Amino acid sequence: MDGDLLSDLLAPLRLRGVFHSRWRARAPWGVRGERENCAIVHYVQDGACVVRLPGSDPVRLGPGDLAVFPHGSAHLLADAPGSPAVPLEAVLPGREPGEMRTVHIDGPGPGTTMLCGGLHYEADAAAPLYRALPPLLVLDRPAVAAEPLLGDMLARLAGEWESGAPGLRLVAVRAFELAYVLALRAALARPGRDAPVLRAMGHPGVAAALLAVQRRYADPWTVGTLAAEAGMSRSAFAAAFRELVGEAPMRHLTARRMQEAARLLAETPLPHSGVARRVGYHSTVGFHLAFKQWHGTTPGDFRRRRRAA
Image (cartoon, rainbow, N blue to C red):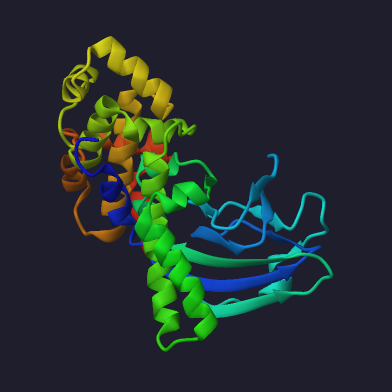
């Protein structure tokens, strides 16, 4: 990959750990969590469980496996498919940011121990490519072990939890933040990765174009100049980009420009003409029309609503 695309995607998110817990559950058990405004990480220390997204088949997790939910998608955790499930609020009521909890679920069957962390990020800063990440990424034990820092850190964190060592709260927060980044890096490096967006980020040509759009979105790009950036023919680039990213190159460029325009309108006092120039529009009218078509509202109304919020 030409350049560090993963860093460019994650740095603007301002990831920060907000909640972490350790679970000790004995079968039968099941917990149903609604969608959360944060990324979520589940690490199975020992035992086993299943995780299931609504409308999807359950995925079994064993010792050393890691499940990552980039968008905080609603999901079910249980010892086995079909086990009765209770709402997350029933076992973790009134969670506050920064809290650290231990959860015990008693039962007569085999036990499972897990570490779970929640990481808040700035949704408005999420690039289009980040939003295209699948709702669930699973790294099995060998994949976690192949990223030595990730496996070692999670194992040591589990041991820290046992000892109750001083500073555990801060250690856990930072560990989950790093675990999330390392897990995404491991997912990108995994052979045969099935999510198209992960293949896109690992494709030398398409990744080079994605990095160019991420960093230099205001440049006067065309499909031809992006293809040249990728070192590919125009037709081969356009086909590969659409297949792997799921949209045409110019639509992806517009999405990146509109994401940055929304951030500038919300966080800066720049006039609309200044925002337009920053994101590659030479005409304020053209920018106004593009923004309204993309976001369903005018730049002025968007800015007023965000400031009021």
